[in-house]
Amino acid sequence: MYRKLKLKFIAISTLSVLIVLVLVLGLVNYITYKSAISDINQTLEFISNQVGDPMAEKQFSNEFKGNISVETQYETRYLFMTFDSSGSFLSINDDHIAAISEGDLEEFINTALRAEEDRGRFDYKGLNYAFLKAKGTDYSTLTIMDCTRYLSAVHFFAKFSVNIGLLSILLTMLIVSVFSRKIVSPYVRNSEAQKQFITNASHELKTPLAIISANTEVIEMTTGKNEWTESTVNQVNRMSDLISQLVVLSRLEEREDIVLTDVNMSEEAKKSVTNYKTIADTKDLKLEYKIEDDIHVNGDEKGVYELINILLDNAVKYCDDGGEINLTLEKKGRNAVLIVSNDYLEGDGVDYKRFFDRFYREDKSHSNEKKGYGIGLSMEESLVRMFKGKIHVSYKKPKISFHIVLGVL
Image 1: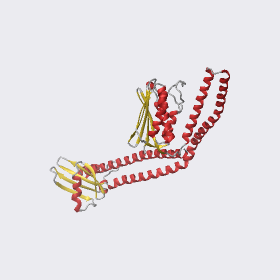
Image 2 (image 1 turned 135 degrees about the horizontal axis):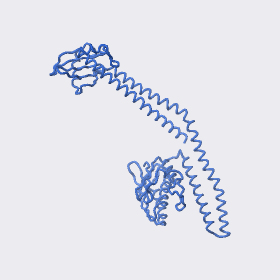
Image 3 (image 1 turned 45 degrees about the vertical axis):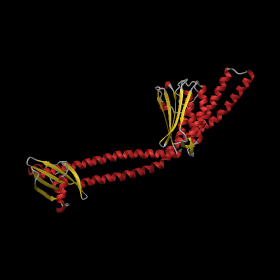
Image 4 (image 1 turned 120 degrees about the vertical axis):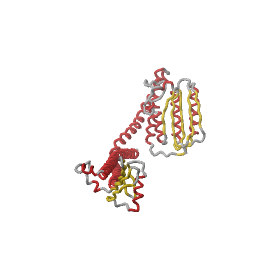
C-alpha cells in the first residue's frame, strides 16, 4: 500500500506541476510570438511608408512608434520594389539586403509575388523573411524584410521553455520523491491501524457472542424456545456474519501482492448460478442466465467465484417480489463483460454513486427484512480492483444492473 500511495502522490504532484508549466510557459511563448509578429508587421508598414513616400519620411523624422524610429530603415535588412498599375516592374531598392545573390534574386522575389496574401512570411535558404504588398492609385509596392532576428528570439525562447520545463519536472519528481514518504506515512499508519482494529475487535467480539449463544441454548433447553430466545439467536447470528464480512473485507484490502492466474470465469459463473437458482425458486423469483463458454480472465479462482456470488446474492435480496434476475457473461473484444440485473421498481432517485460505500444501504430504516450490512458491494469493488477491472451500476426502470469488465486471456 505504501509504495502505491507514494507513486500515486508523485504522479499527481508531477502532473500538477506539468499542467502549470504548460499553461504558464505556453502563455508566455504565445505572447512573445504575438509580440514578435506585431513588431514585424509594424516595421514592414513603416519601411513601406518611409521608402515609398519621401514626404512621410519628413513628417516621421522625429516621431517614434514603439521600438520603431527613422533609424529602423537603416538597421533593418529589406528589399523594396515598385510596379505600375499593370503590374510591370518599375524600380528596385536592394541596397539594404546582401544575403541573396543576384542569381537567386529573381526566385526570391517570385516567392513573395506568388503568395495570394498581401502580407505573410516565408523561408529562404535557412533565413526568415516577411513581405508586404501595398496598392496605390498609380502603382503598387512590394516590401520584403529579413525577420530572422525577430523569430530567432521566439525560437530560442521556445527551446529554452522546453528545457526549463523538463528540468523543472525532473526536479519536482526528485523533491517530491524525497518528501513523499513523510507525507503519506500518516495515512498509511491510520489505514493499518483501522485494519488492525477491525481484526482485533472481531476476535474480541466473538467471545461474548459465543457465550450469549451458549447461554441462550441453555435457556431454550431449560424453559423451551420462545420469541425472546429466537430473537437473541437471530441477532447473534447477524452479528457473527457482520464480523466475518468485516474480517474478509479487511483481508481483501491487505492483499496488495496477490498473484493473478488463469481463471475460467464461465465455469465459476455456472457454479454460482446453480447455487442461487434454488434460492431464487424458493423466493418465487425467476433467474435467467446466458453464459458464453470458455471465457478466461486474469484473476483468483475463489475471488472470481465470490465476485459473482456477491452480485447474485444482492440481486436475490433486493429483487421485487415475483421479479426477474438476469445474468449474462460474454466476451467483447479483449474484455469479459458480466452483467447482473434485477427488477427494482423503487430505483428512481437513488444515489447510485454511493452503492459501493462501506455500510451504505438504500433502505434508510435499516430494517432487518432484507438482510445486509452494506459491505457486500464494497467487497465487490475491492475484488474488481484487485483483478484490475472496472465496475459500475446503472438503472433503467424497472431494472438495476451491475456491470463488471475484466481483461480476458
